[in-house]
Image 1 (cartoon, rainbow, N blue to C red):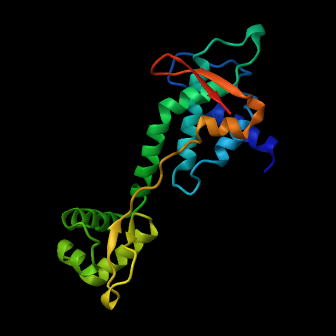
Image 2 (image 1 turned 90 degrees about the vertical axis):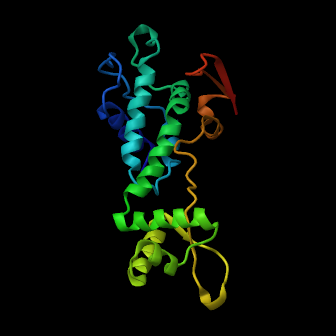
Length: 217
């Protein structure tokens, strides 16, 4: 997909996403020309995760709302998203978006898989060790064949892991998956380094402290 096509797709997403949660409305020509560095942002999202499109469109709506909170350009020029807008939105929404990705990975699994995972979490917390199929069967009062089926599904869904190493009689033990998703959006500094058209440095107002922050490449 070309940069032009991708930018048009971003422009459409920005204009058709949910209205900003503030009583300010964009003008007809606002957000028609999104910055090229938004391509970099989209390419560095956790695309393997579920519901990524929903959360991305939600962030675009928030990003537009941030842009609408600052003074409009002079000369009746249309308003577009700036890199400073992204920095502000990143500080506000990145923690919530990371939490949403983690929650979605669990919600996509069927109930028996979540029961198995919860049992593994509980038994692992009690013993400090990996959990066997037999231990799970006893804990959940299920037969071992059913336990094995849903442990395999839990592993495929990425919510449990097989404990590494070899054991007597090839006994398998399972552990709850340690969530590795620590980010949703790329860091502003990484975007600045990868997109020289932004400039060598950028300034923005921290949304929580009100202090001017400077990012350098």
